[in-house]
Length: 230
Image: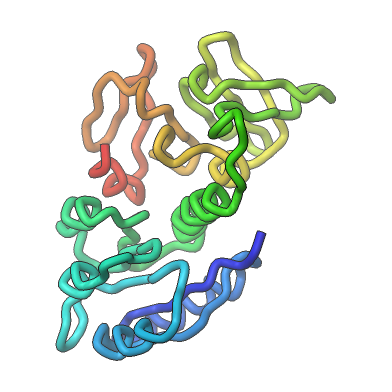
């Protein structure tokens, strides 16, 4: 897969450094440029395409949300801000994710993996069978086919993950980041560093807990804003 080209629009030097350092650590990301305000970024985007924008909300001259509304065909957007109250507005504008400062690297990875999954789906040629609705997982030296529609939730267990499905449970040696990059983002959501759940199987939720198939699953602080897209 080709690298995901990205730009950073951020007026705080420390935040720019954090984001550029994080981007440099992710092999599939390529930083094209960074801008201290959205006007400069607008000029750049007139002649250059990008795959991903890291966008701060409180910018000089033109605010982040106002800038986003000016884009007729926006790339993937990850909002970065210190203010959680903008999460709902961000998701109405179809942003990929919302990162609350100070941004932890693990949470950053969750966000960019969502972009990676969507980017991969766009690059894959269509075939007669349409979109793939399953994944093969290594389970005890076998490749086991698991339908996305059967998955209830996925739990991290150190170097393994436990996939709970309507057909049973499967233990596989992989990380939650790896499985998250495979799962369709419109079907699954990360709600905790240790849990990914099927959106369609959520029965109810609060700010701290999700009920799914009679099981209570905690919601991590860094993932609460993501529930705004449900």
